Amino acid sequence: MDRTLRVPARDKSRGVAALEFALSLTFLVPLLMGMLDFGYYFWISTNAEEAARAGVRDAVRASAGAVCGAIVTNLAKTNGETPAVGTGSACIGGAAYCYMNEPPLFMGAASGPTTVTVTCLSALPNVDPTWQVSVQVDFQPSLGFFKNLMKAGAGGTVRYTATAAAAGL
Image 1 (cartoon, rainbow, N blue to C red):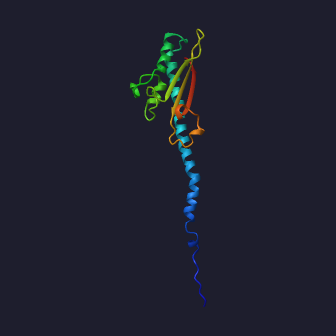
Image 2: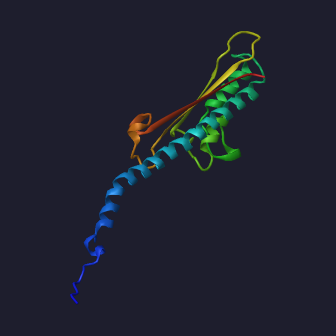
Image 3: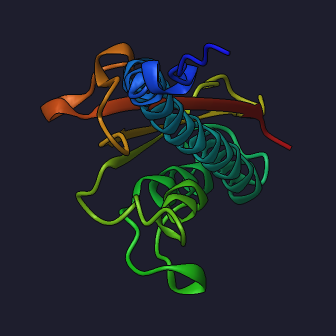
């Protein structure tokens, strides 16, 4: 009986798994980096949107339905634009600014990446004011892998702007 030794098939394919893994990483790593960058971008955007809504609620409540230019509405506008100092109940400034400065964001500190603009839109007498609050956040993406695909801000940052508006009481 003639017996020939056969080489097992797995010896011929040695190293193929490592090669396949290396090739698949060229697609998987950018995909993972993009997921992290865009996830962080959307997390910042949802918080900025909620901060703008909180600012509008604060402005409407503070103005108590007074017309634009009245002392009460000017005070509401000023409170919305004051830089926040501290966090939580000790936060000085409008609701939008304080919202962006509380944990886990900490993005509303004085001269920080968050800019809050409060505008009274209705200047007609005897008309409830319409408040517009804009929250602009300039931030560094978590990894910066796909920074060029996001809206550019100042100094190599990414910019997100959220705007909310509501009529007075």
